Length: 212
Image: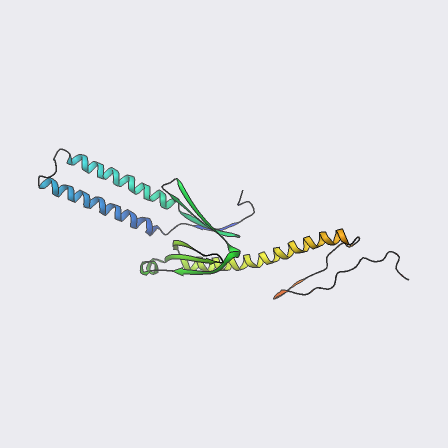
């Protein structure tokens, strides 16, 4: 699978305040509907016999709506591996939206918090890449996640450079072994602190009939 050669370093969900806020709005809406129904009944504009049924329907609808909102929140998560960050959102428990950003493509990361976010320590994580930006909303401890992601992205970029150099060496080694019989290794380029240094010249195979 796609995670076989990756290590999950961090996984989380949007801050619980987001689902609590939605639930509070639902409860207030149902309460307002109940009060309106009671007022209409007192004014004789609402049949008394149907009032208990209406209250029962409102309560059942409220429960279904609350469960729906909770499961949508529970299926909204993001995780960070040693290669990428993935944000998965499932809408209506069926449709899935997935955003993936390779760590090596990240240019900068921003943490944005509003007044409530500053009080409760959460905010939006904005990831800027070569091709655009991705926003992950309502991240708990967003500044700590920002620092972790910046560290992982810098490590991944460095690893990608070494992988590219390794692929280059392997390809050159194959070409040399085919075109220069007896050449067994590619000598340098070597790494050194601060970058890739200039290596020595390619060693030539020793002449089997060298001069004494």
